[in-house]
Length: 262
Ligand code: IPD
Ligand code: CA
Image 1: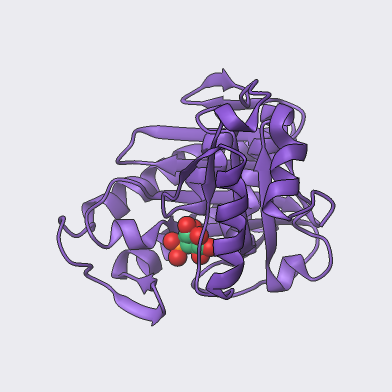
Image 2: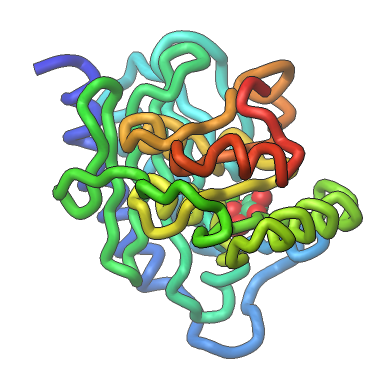
């Protein structure tokens, strides 16, 4: 068995266990039970606890690998490195909504070579390893075969990290092409949905490495087109992300004003 397959075999049940633990800590529906790190940027007790569980478990299984999590900052670059978002979709998690996930990506240098995105409340586990295809709940999955943006569905992610004016422009141009718009509050799950063919595209003006580390491999392995997140300072500073079903990729890129090469 390859080193990557061994790691994926460990990462899948670990992400599922982390999801079970986080789910047990989730607040009930109602007003958000969380602290604000910035505008609509939430932090719950479960974020720290879940990241600690994953950091310790991965270090025990693969002591030679690096680790970086959203809450505990960056580790060294190079070699095999786990990149974890303990809870993506924290704004949903904090108010009892089901649309959130645990994201565990594995980088080899700057390349995403394996990934698991587990959404416990939805019962979905997306996974992939480089060269081996992508799966949803162990069944092979592919990006959609849509060829007309006007028949498509696109998610546009939003955060406070870029001025709203750019978001309005992007959304307007995509809607004018006739696509149906969605915003689900979890970048990792939006990207995973592109890989599963549940939507046709995902676009966001700025997103961080931990949000996309697992999704990048999952998207590539599903046959979706995905932008070069690592271009420029992407690894350290974040970058835009564009993921699309191949048949509408160019049309979406033009409408969103975002390229695939970075
Ligand atoms: C955020 C979510 C959101 C995306 C933001 C992310 P968080 O992560 O993925 O959908 O638009 O860019 O920061 O705060 O839920 O972990
Ligand atoms: Ca996140």
